[in-house]
Image 1 (cartoon, rainbow, N blue to C red):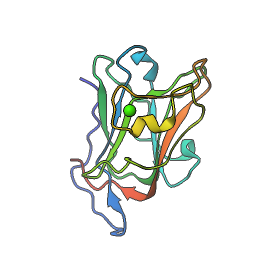
Image 2: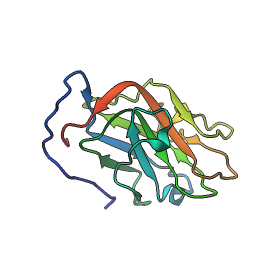
Image 3: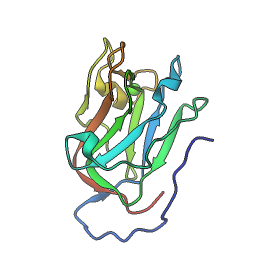
Image 4: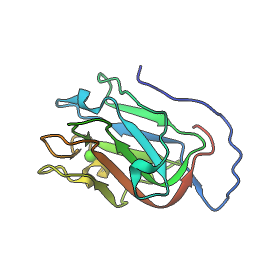
Amino acid sequence: MGIFIRTYNVYIKTNRSVSNIYSVVIFNRQDCCSERLNPFNIHIGDSDQVSTNPQCGGDLQIDVSHPSISVSCPGMRGRYVGVRLPGSSRILALCEVQVFPGVNVALGKPTFQTSTAVLGEASRAIDTLADSCSHTNVHGEANPAWWVDLGQSYVIDRTS
Ligand SMILES: [Ca+2]
């Protein structure tokens, strides 16, 4: 079993102008190197300085025998959803990142990352192809990160 964070079943939505995020789903590399993702952090918030936004769940671990992990972050909100690898000399590859308020709101949105390897464009993490992955500098770097700009703030109001 991968880590599945489940807390509240119900959250009272106080701002009706925002939509709902239920979970963030991350697809890991399957061809090699799947252990490189551990540990990772998910940041959600309205700052484009992604690493300053609140973390969902602290240091997270994916079960490397599973292709993906679904992380619920109830009560969090934000326009930017980021994945960051804490530590020196890390390499971040993401094959898909999905943000779910019923439908995947990350699709078609602008994506960014701290560095880009050849054929590892940030947009590959939202191209719906599990064998096409974003990739930061192959030599590693401190605290590499990837993020998507959802264009508006979304809030989690309950787990799905
Ligand atoms: Ca992909």
